Image (spheres, helix red, strand yellow):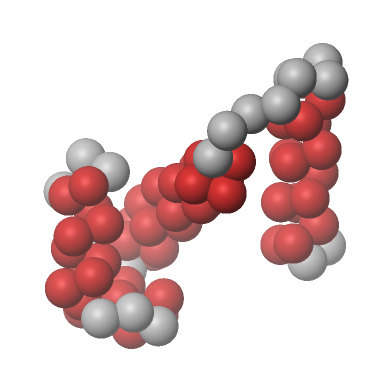
Length: 74
């Protein structure tokens, strides 16, 4: 199953849990909720090597380091 299908299922579940209510900043919330486990798992896969993890993610190492700090993962 493609990753996007898993994400779509999670989003549908989240929206269903809102019981018809709206939420502000859904894009920001969704991006954060995806990035945190993505960075953590890729970093784990790379045995903590941030340069390798950044390359695997296709982002600059400094960007990864900033995101890790922002999310309390560093």
